[in-house]
Length: 363
Image (cartoon, rainbow, N blue to C red; front, side, top):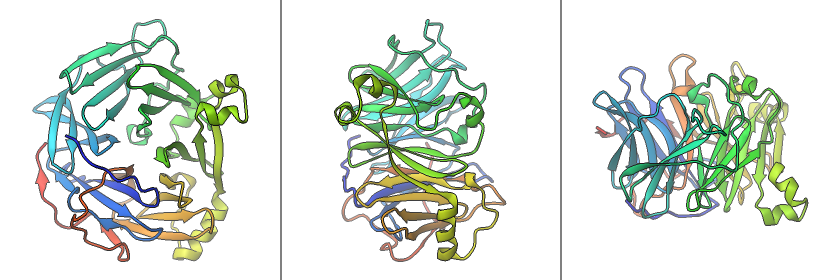
């Protein structure tokens, strides 16, 4: 299931998972954004599913989906280039899994479950499925203790995990949980938007994303004031500013912060209107360090915002029923199709989603 991928920081790969409410089918649209305005459709990677699936993670050309095999829940590890699917049976644990992640090094993949309902003293256990063995194993990190978690989370608002630099990163309870795949070691870092009553914030609809650019991990989020981007520093970078002790507590550096009133004034000049604007309707999707550009989902559209120039660009538009624009989710992806892949647009014509016709697959 190996796949080649390009790592060109001046371009960004975006994926749209469009869920059709009438029959539960889904459409996955892969887009290349090579400028601040416009996206091209990559037909070699895009596909539809007949059955209901949820997107859990992207990693180096693979997608982790949850679905059913008959009446039994399962995971699917899917390669959109080859259309090859590996069905992974779910474990027997119930109720304790709070996060799911995917790691893929080009040869083998691992599906990792974070179990917060463990009877272990620190309440944390990881369950790992390896494509090498075809089996699940359990791993109990002893060096950290999970923070208290809210009793209920809106699953569509859970921040997708990020695999970067050999580790899976999860946002969990106001902290960043980092799992180093090769060693099995875990670290826990406080997030920049953490505060005492995190359980209250987790029930709000402010959006967050973890993304990689230029080999670095970034945490992007919106709040009542605006949208913000923080860079996760490595220990060498951090020691130039603070002590090792400080790094364990707060290894972050603020990269950009834009207030809503500033953004909205530019957006209104750009498109002329924004009906029913609220802070929670701006969702960060991806960030390009070299281009100094963030990509944002708004109701009915995806736009780019350049921090250097303060200019906006239109990437694509999408339709949605009534007020449910959550039926259309966007993710950043490093997946790249072959150089001769068929593309519908050249990035200058606006792409409208969903796509009218696309072959359906039965996972």
